[in-house]
Length: 422
Image (cartoon, rainbow, N blue to C red; front, side):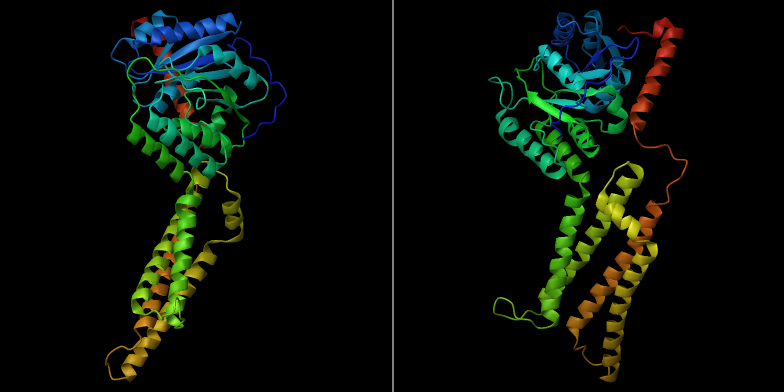
């Protein structure tokens, strides 16, 4: 996390509000009016020119009507999901800066000037930290002491963001960095995605402590399902930890076990035989496959998701398809050579019992690993065959949402009967 204060950014573009307050909403009839009123009061009391956008996510309790009556601009997003609602709200926002706040009254809208001040002071993203100011009954104990701390620490371990509360529902961002973030997820993992993408883009992320109040209305959070979605998202966006490191460990351990058995090296006071060799072969084969998957995951993220990875970029610049084919072919040929020698020895012995079981396992292992490397090299080459006229990935989803909203606005302008308020 970059804590360095930058130079104050430029003022609002002509005609644009200074701050857009975006509130996702799904059946929040008991709280949405109060949220809109508090947001408007915070803007007016601090002389902030702004707009309030409620991204309704298919509510069936009149939440959208209540929000519109309270003075919010309502954007309808029928596709369910926390991330989907925010995508629609962010696409509709016109402000130079955007404040994102949940619709359950757990956050204090009077904090808006602090978020705005950080953004105007050079921050690209500002995130609240609830963990030291949680009011009694505001957060279940397993969220407070297990779920949120563990997921935030894992996120920081994998991506080095330095954010203390990565899943806080009150955060702010500069609108002009949204294309860089290229946000895509539709569920609760959207909160993690924002932080991860900001860290990967080396944006200036800041945080400060805020209070967290008991929520109004019914919680939409599913502890285990949404927790798993967050964990899954963290892992799939860190191929080094999901694939490369486990694969490398398995491959190295497997190779060492096979070496110990083949050269009859005593370990722990005994010699190891065929069963240990089979275990080592299994580890070496699986480890190589996992490593290959990790490298392919790096390639996909680089070519199709706009990711940048110095290690992969160096490897890509140094090694070509032909290198992989030579390495894989060489390993496989070594296995074939050993296997051929075993067959010849078996023939010369009169087709009796094969006495080289250890070498046979080694030969099979080398052939399998060689084939894996050989065809993985082709797969990497296929992934690299991108169309040159392909649309750059940055901001694609956001642009699609903006285009859809623009089309809906034109329809409403042509036929006011289609308008549903807001």
